[in-house]
Length: 276
Image (cartoon, rainbow, N blue to C red; front, side, top):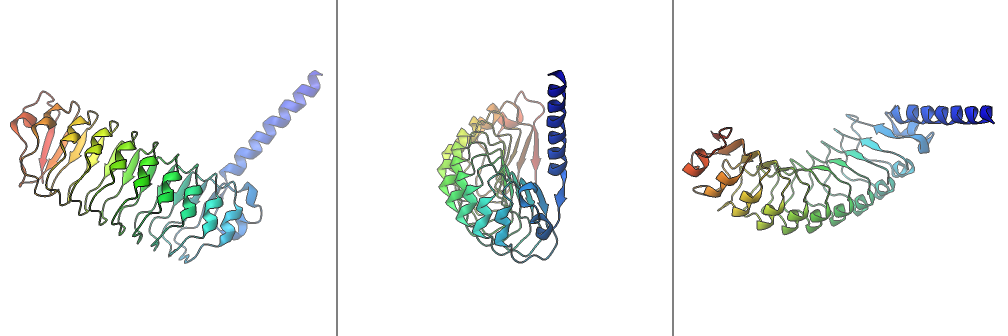
């Protein structure tokens, strides 16, 4: 009986070791990956001038990491939605203008990189990616963000710099775990008061915009350490309630704005006001 248990235990260890080894293999082309699709966990096809992605990508049902950065992709096949185990999807520096609604089927996705594309819109289905922690859409052509962004309750980092955004949906206030929000280099004219609900916020960058005021609700972000307001618009003197932010270390402003005495003379001597 003991021998039987011993060999059973050894068999389990060998199986786990074999699985770990398979998980570590990085495939670099789709042809090789399709030879044994159910055992492919990582696929990287980067800097390959790839202008289309075969629908056969949907056969890699256990894929966890897909890296297609620096290619010429203009579209993604709907079959991308079959990758239900995908945790990281890197589409940095392609030519994507839209995303298929099937992107919402990636319900295990945690890291999604879309920067340096030509995206004009995001499908509302992105709100179904409930495990998403990091979403980077810098340097695109986005004019708006869908209301469904507020469904991403696990989102921690959101990068939206260098787009054409005029505002944010009020639902952004539902992203209660958001720690980093980069909105600089847009044409944002107003921010919703719900931004004050982002109690986990540490880094908030809203410089280089067209705001006419800074919402007072920012003063509710008591975990905020860095705040960039430089060239954020014709906002005039900053609200004195910024002095109530207990751990604010770094405040960026421009020569057209002024930090009130209550801010610069506060008890937090770590605070550094940088005039750009």
